[in-house]
View (cartoon, rainbow, N blue to C red):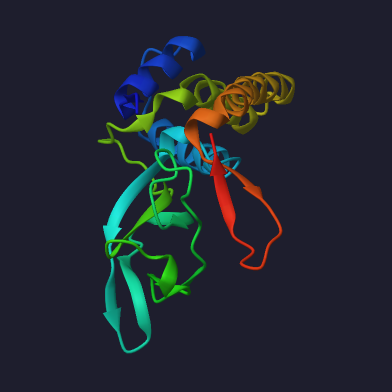
Length: 201
């Protein structure tokens, strides 16, 4: 994933806003705005840059078979095989209990491992962050500028920048939708006795 640092984003913002420096109050406002706006964008869709498919070994306890801890990830799907490489891969039903992924169907499991499609959960950024997703750079610059304008009582300018920010974000959403076949398995269900789903590439 291409990333930018907090410092790089701040300098980009200052350049667009025409500000040579940010005082302590502005720095605090900038960071809060960044996290609020980025949290909203984070949940707008399943961004490929934030998604990984990992092969994970299965463990067992008194409750049944499970896959470790979800940590700071949002679980999207669990597969018995790598769905990008094997057309016979099937999604496995699961439940999340105490941050563990409990698998419902034992017979779908091969080689004592499953493949978990997961999305990184949003964790607030700080002044030392170096991993802000670059796809949000233009969106964040306009969105944060809009918040600064609004805080200064410049409503019309704030609305204009809000519109620009949304346009930047919609462009990224459109990009993802066009490339979605390359970034996430496409599932086609069919009716039979097992009611399983197959992967089509």
